[in-house]
Image 1: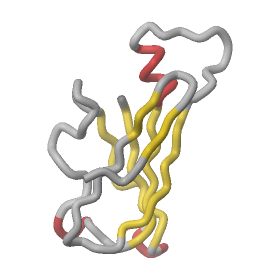
Image 2 (image 1 turned 180 degrees about the vertical axis):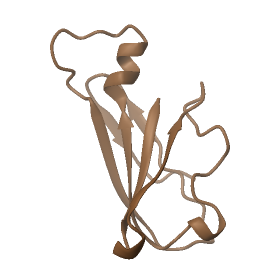
Image 3 (image 1 turned 30 degrees about the vertical axis):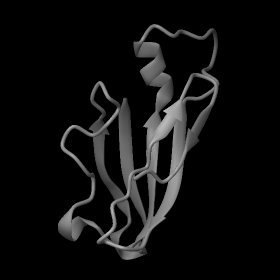
Image 4 (image 1 turned 90 degrees about the vertical axis):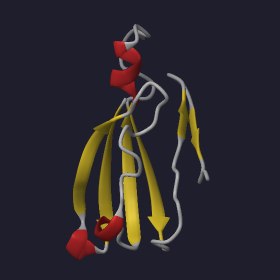
Length: 100
């Protein structure tokens, strides 16, 4: 699945950081998205392109997909912590949480 990571705050560091494609396990192939100096305390947003993902798997839905892009906004406040932000998703629902 294609996903995009944006930093929303602090404003002087805001913007798109990167786009990724998850591996067959649904994880980033090269480990954490933020490492070292890239990890700045602030607010971030993942955008998961679930409509494209399910269409590529042959899960066609007539008309407009119920879920197309799923944004998940979250805050990071400790560079020494490990943050895992999984998305459990179907064509009709999703949930997320702070994983370990």
